[in-house]
Each structure stands twice: as C-alpha cells, then as structure tokens.
Length: 260
Image 1 (tube, rainbow, N blue to C red):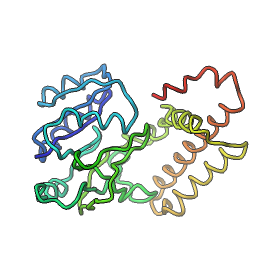
Image 2: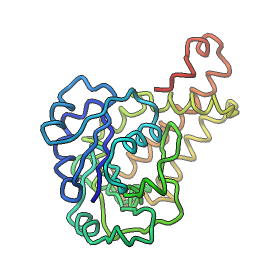
Image 3: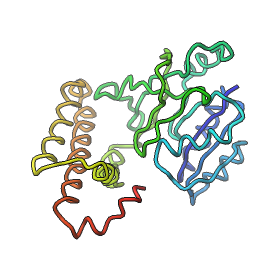
Image 4: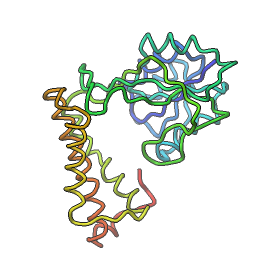
C-alpha cells in the first residue's frame, strides 16, 4: 500500500480535507509538523494520522523526514493545500506497485486563486512528481523548491488540485512573507553575484516570461496579476541580494545559517 507524507505548519483549515483526500489511496498518513500553534496536530491525529515533530529544515530535508517513519515503500507526498481529483484516485488505484517499472509517478497540478483555475502563466500543467518508491529515490536535499531525484518517472493522465491562494491579496502577500528574503539568503550563501541592474532585469524577465512566453495574456486580469506578482517577487529577491553585498549594516544583522 501507500503512505502519505504531509509537512505542516499551522494548517488547521487544510489538514482535515487533505487527509480525507489521501485516505482514498493511502493506508497510512504521516504528518511532519514543524511547530504548529493552531489545531493542525489535533485535527491530524483525530483523522488517524501519525504526527512527527521536526523543526523546519528546508523543503527537501523536511519532506525526507517521513521516510524514517513510514511502513510502506511507496510514498505519496502532498502539501496540505492540495487534493487528489477523482481521476488521480482512479489512476493511483490502478497502478500495480509490485511490478512497477517506474520509480515514481507525476501528476498535473491545477493551481488555483480562489475558485479560479489558472491555466496559463506556467501554472498548468505544472507536472510534479509526488508518488515515489522511497527505496529507489527521494527528494533533493535542498532548502527551497525540492523535487524527487529519478529519471524513471511515469506521467499520469490525472490532476492534483492546489489551492494556492484564497484570493489576489494572498498572492501579493507572498513577497511580504519573506520568500524573496529566504531565496536571497540562499543565493548569497552560494556566492551569486549581482549588480545594480539585476533586480530590474530579473523582475522584467519574470514578467515577460509569465505574460508573453507562458501566455498569461490569455488569462485576462488573472494572467496580468500573476505576471506582476512574479515580477515583484523576482525583483525583491535580487534587490535583497544586492543589499547584502552593498550594505554591511543589513548583512551583519542577518543569520545566514538560519534560512527559515
């Protein structure tokens, strides 16, 4: 059978429906919680999940924690704000895991703003590998945007639903939650070089990519909104990175060993 792997921090509004979703294909749920102060843990345990406490280590490291606790070799890694569609449930239940010739399986992902499915801007099909054999592969050991490391992947004709943002306000609040600052710190640790033009060039490039190359213009107002949000996030990331190099006062206030 399959074990579900869900990492959480204050996900009381999402964790219940998420667990209900994965229980359609999984016989075990492991929740790796990084210190929730709401009812996330209480709700997860009431649904029969095993909760493991782990201070947040970064994306790939945190998602690999469940490997130490699961009873099955096949793991479905899913975020608390994601759900399996009926087609995804059917596809997973049809897999012959004992004779599988693949190490992992990928789903398309429908990224949502409110109830609106964003089909352009690179937000769909947004294939992501989420079902994998832990004895043959695992998440890359990186702090941001990790993915499963394997070249033996089957792409399923099925979707996950990702409730990315409840509204446009949440989309634009993302930079304010310091994702750009974390990304800048990671780049600084890697020695990434920037100049005075970098924030503008990267921000402009992000907008052009989303709006034109990834056809955001076909998505109307939402396409423009997503493109502008991507531009702001990219601009802030490189502006903050530049600030670390040019302002010793700001740099000395940062702990570059503490990304999260």
